[in-house]
Length: 250
Image (cartoon, rainbow, N blue to C red; front, side, top):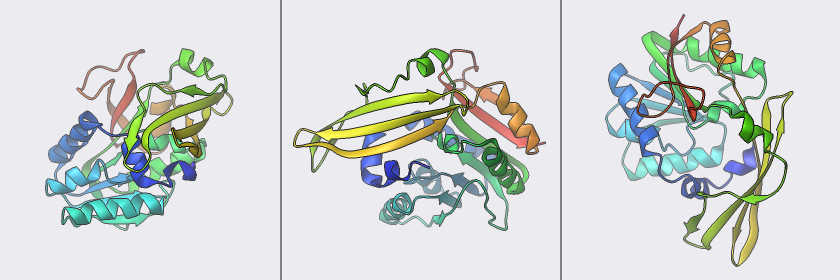
């Protein structure tokens, strides 16, 4: 589950700073639905805290205790009451339903096995209130990009950032693609001038292809009602960067 990649929550937030369009999309979904919100794979609360700030009852579930500790710290700073729960999105039971359930930022792709994806989707369905929606985003697999995953370490453009303690941080990535498993297996290297490779962490993400996605959802009792290709609600096309999916109970 790539635990080491998420072991430094503040470093993670600096690596993936920004993301306002995604945050605004999920906040708008919460406004449409009203009521309670559950985020699976909530991390440090980057999406959920703005929703809680708008006054919606929020619950966040994540497998990483480090990420949840940072989420709690950020919520406390804003005097927000958010329920943070350590748990596994493959199978969970809160004993109640929600008006919106969402999974952001490719977090769903940490589930590599079909049985795990189905387990997650079935748990989601059991937690949807009448009229509720399940929304998630995953990348749209690009065959050329996957084929170029040759295991060579390269600097990843656009991911450098400044760490208050280390200064400028460079990020290198080496990836291979396991076509049989549909999993990209990567190693991420974080380096500062005075501290080369201060963090080396694996990150493995499954690809979910557009044609298989509705079948997986249907097998779990869910129905894909809309699929967008970007955060502005543009149409999903073959070259869209993401699959932004809106689902309901079947």
